Length: 246
Image (cartoon, rainbow, N blue to C red; front, side, top):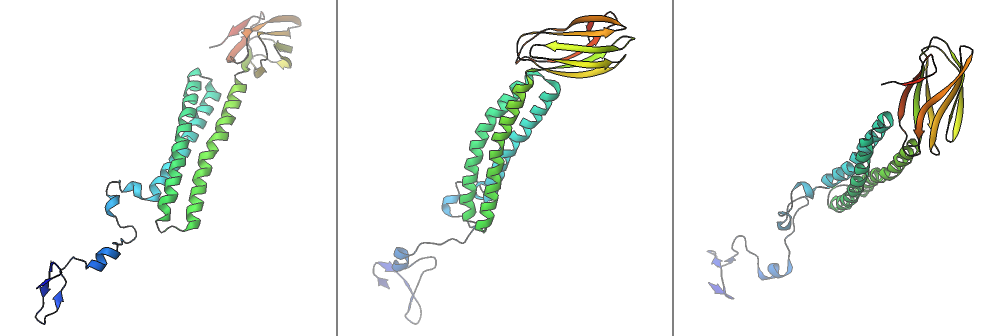
């Protein structure tokens, strides 16, 4: 029968039958369709499924915090061991990339909190995970500052491995350089000592010693300057000449 401009099916007893899948006017005007938790709504189809889960954003924040930290410390340790100039460039690039990743990580933490509030995670779990990820991100800044300061100081330190390549002992070996001096009481035949000299100005590194009852002197490094230190392997020969070892 025709009622209010709509067609309705009439059962055998005369009662109007509601068509399947349709809503009455009060339902259409006053109700919105509710979706169960974790069920995709029509507006979520445009986003990747992984990006809808809070674990994705938490993992991204952890990667942004740990990757520059691990790479930076590895390059720092390698430079301290080898003093390769290339590693200084690599370290600077890691610091710049780390700043970008810190921004990305901060945004990921915000997205994690927003997504986690819609999940079954408790407020305590959300706070704990967000705090740990934030601490990991922030730890990059003091670690980077520490590496920069130690590297800058290390560029002023000349490192010398000095060997007595003679048949007699060297006694009272006095070594002087711009900004300091040190004395080695005795350096036996074939013996090697390690020296680290803090260079404070331009100049040369000289030595004097007593060799087989005679005084001898010489120059270990002809020129040193701050912020350009390097490593040296040197030996003192029988005639008190200095030889550079490969």
